Length: 165
Image 1 (tube, helix red, strand yellow):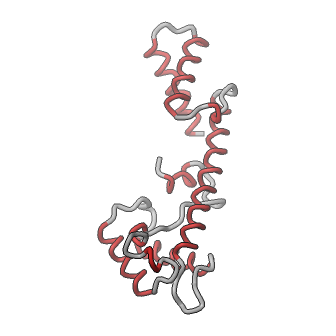
Image 2 (image 1 turned 180 degrees about the horizontal axis):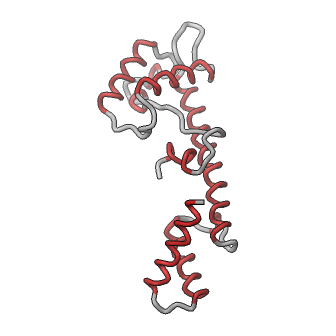
Image 3 (image 1 turned 45 degrees about the vertical axis):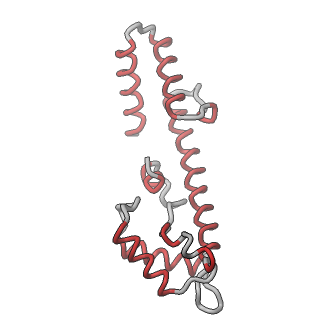
């Protein structure tokens, strides 16, 4: 699942959302002046990004992304007194916003798993495959099923039902 889709998919879009980042602005070409980039330079990078990128958020048009980016620069106080932009400050806030999305997403994911199986604490697992392995094995034991495929199908139906709720 893409980070940009987590707030919508787990129903917390009003609390936090993936923000706009034009990654091509951060390169060896800009590192010496990343804290003082001009509007013209940013606009060139935005155009380049839109022309060459397979962006991660298809729900927003390029114009909407750019508008939100410029608004973020203002709201996050990344505009210098000389009218240039501090992209280092922007990137710090951007990363913090990503962490908010991940934190709330983990909380929602934990709640979802509690509706599926109260014994599961997602924080006890390092990966989704390890969680799935535990869950499937516990379902086989609970169901007394000797046919692994039958247990897997039943578990999949349970997960599908919970995700639909």
